Length: 337
Image (cartoon, rainbow, N blue to C red):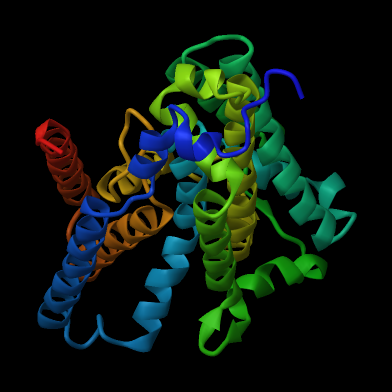
């Protein structure tokens, strides 16, 4: 095919340093160890501060179930940010997907169609954002901010600002949260499956290599034969798909569809990606780091709730953590390689 890169271009061409940077080795491994140490430290704090409540199996399972929703969204956000973009609309898109899937018309077709509807709505919203960014040449911040507002408004319009309950005949959705295998609800396994699939896609496929390349140096990626616009569109479609899956999880956990679902989830997802080691400028990051970031934030939230601290204190703590993570990133970029 004329103009296509020769076999071995990944190894010899201009993308070689980008691929090496995106692999997440070296400093990335130390960051992962640091996050594991942070989780261990938080666990110790939990055992000391709430010895009767924190170490219980019910609380630990609750932490994983709580992490499932934001964790699935974070996987999609990781791909977008590594690819050089950002998605501010994830919380609103998840809310829209949950509302659309729980309307009377959709519920009349049963739980399978409800789940499919949530995924299609989420993916469709991601495609719209991707089209505006890749082919409409809009700045990702502006395009996804517009989607954030529009999706939330549409969800409010469809639901008339009311919470929509899942009907008893569609309790198969709820069973994803209540049915347990080896002591864990099915939503945790969905989260794990998405995380593993994301890791494989990012680290073992051409799609992943192209994501690192597009985020690290779009012009070099274009010269190497990558259709940067199409790949950017696919990244946002993937983020929307993850929002659809997260909508299924939130419906299972709350048995509702609501326009209030996912409030500030975009900030939690971005924060988890940042402390997981993904560069906001793109080109470097790992799914494993992002998942560890999700667990850190979820554990912090759990500790604050158990100790009766206010939500405002949680937000302050998260803000401090984000600031420290960004400063460490900037220091790492300045250090000689």
